[in-house]
Length: 154
Image (cartoon, rainbow, N blue to C red; front, side, top):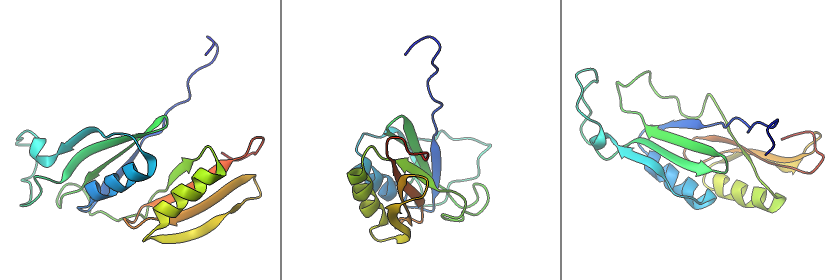
């Protein structure tokens, strides 16, 4: 990198789950590879007078986990009742995954959509990307694409 080039900003996405964060992140690790960063359960949380009491059975639920994927980190946690507003699964975001090849798009899309719902089949789009979208079996919305060299998308 030359002095006049700046690194791209990184985008980290945080996902909240009702009680299946570990299951979801194990599936994502199987799909994308890598090792978890900063895995903590609610049992690891120090006692605090500022926090509501933890519901029974939540000690082994995930308080925080990170999974590096390329230059980004996918982060997540389970959301105990009473810790913020009620969770609405999958209604307010999509995770966008840019693959290095069409074959990788096919593999990742098939794995993510297994047990979920395809919202747009993989196809060549007018802006030049090979693109598809789905909701995985955990209620997470995904956009998966490959931007061919010279394509306007990305």
